[in-house]
Image: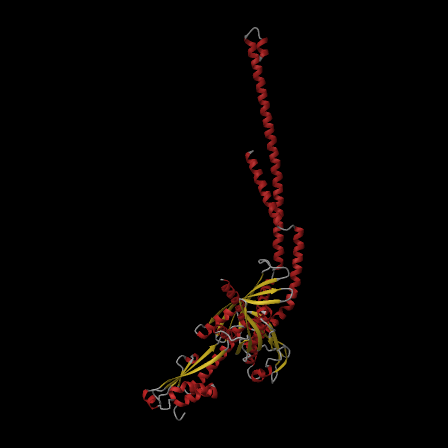
Length: 287
Length: 300
C-alpha cells in the first residue's frame, strides 16, 4: 500500500506538471488561428517585401549617392551615427505643459586626413510658446593628435559647446593644411636642389639653401592659427641664417629687417609669389 | 465474567467452559476485527488501485495533449520560416543598412551644413548656433548648371550674399558655403546677444537698445548702481568684422555731470575691455552679480 500511495503521489505530481505545461502552450484551436494569422501577416508583408526588394536595393543606391554627394559638398565624411532619446518628463519634475527630451548623439567620420569622433547631448525643452534646443555637453576626439593647433582649438570648442564652429573651423583648417602641402610640394618639385622639406610635405617649415650659396639659409615657417572665435588664418614667418662675414657687409641691415620685409612682401605678392621670390634669391643663376 | 463466577457451583468445568467461551468470543472478535481490518485494507487498496488507474488515465491524456500542443507550436513557427529564411535575412541586412544611411543623412545637420538633392540641383541648409544654443536655419537653393545659380534662398538681405557668391560660387562651392556659414552664424550670434540683453537685462538699461537689422551696430545706455549713487554710461558697439560675434570698436562714455574719479575711470575702461572680449549678455550678467557684491560690501 505504501508503494501504491507513493505511486499516487507521483502521478498527482506529474499531472500537475503536465497541466502547467499545457497552460503555457496555446490550445489547439488557438494555435491554428494564430498560425493562420501570423502566416497571413508574414505572407502579406512578404509580398510587400518581395515587391519592394528591388525597390529597396535601388533606394539604397539612391541613398548612397546622396551621402556621397553630401560628403563631396561639405568635405565631411560621416561614417557612423547613433542617437538615443530620453524623455525627461518621466525622471524629472516638470511643470504642466513643459516637455523635456534629452538626446544623446554619437558621430564619427573624417575630413581628409583628420578623423573625428563626437559625443554630444542636446536638451530640447518644449513650452507652450516655443521650442528651445541647447547643446548641453560636447566631447571631441580628433586624430591625428600631432597638430597642436587643433588640440587647443578642440578644447575651446568643447568649452563653448559650439558644434558648428568645430566643423567650420575644421573645414578651414584642412583647407589651409592642404594648400600649404600643395604649395610646398610645388616648390620642392620646381626647385629640388634649393628647397628642402625636413619633415616631408606635411611639414610646417620650408628651408631654402643652395650649394652655390653655402652658409646662407632661409627658413619659412608657415603656421595655421585658430583664434578665439575659431577663425583660421595662416601665419608665415621668415628666419634667416647668414654667415658672420655677410652680416658685417650688410650695412643696410637687410638681414635684420628681413622678417618684417617678408611680411610686407606677403601682403603685396601673396604667399606663392613671395615664397618664389625668396627661393629665386638663393637659386642658381641659370634656373 | 461475573455470571460465570456466580453461576458456577460445582467448580471445575464451568470456569473452564466459560473461559473457553470467552476465549472463543475473543477469538471471534479478533477475527472479526481482523477481517474488518482486512476488508478496510482491501477496500483501501482497491480504492487506491482505482485512483491510480484514474490518475494514470488523466496523466496519459495530458501527456498526449502537451505533445500535440508542442507539435503544433513547432509547426506554426516552422511554417513561417521555410525557405524564406535566406531572403528575409538579406532583407533585414538591407533594411538595417537603409536605416543607418538615413540616420547618417540626418546627422549631416550637426555639421551645420546639410543638403538635399533636388531635381534642379541641391538645396543647402545652413544651421546656426551660439554658445550651444541652436538658432535659426537658412537655406540656399542652387541650380546645377554652368554657371551655378542661386534659385532662391532665405538669407536676410543685409548679409552680403552676392559678394560672397561673386567671390567663390563659381570656383569653389565649398568655400562659398562655409563662408556663408561664417556670416550667418556670426549674425545669429550677435542677434542672440542683443535679444538676450533686451529680454533678461532690461532692468539695467536706462533706455531702449538701439540696434540695426544686421546687429552689428548697437547703442545703449546703462547704469551701475553703488548704494544710493548711480553711474550712467553710454556704450556704442561696432562689429566691423561681420564674421565675428565680438565687436571691433567699443566706446563707453560716462553720462554724468561731474568728472569721474580715477577708480570709476578705471571701471569705465574695464567696461570697454569687457565688451570687446565677452559676449554682451554675459557682461551684463556679471554687472548684475557685481551689483550684488557691491551692495554686500556696502552693507558690511
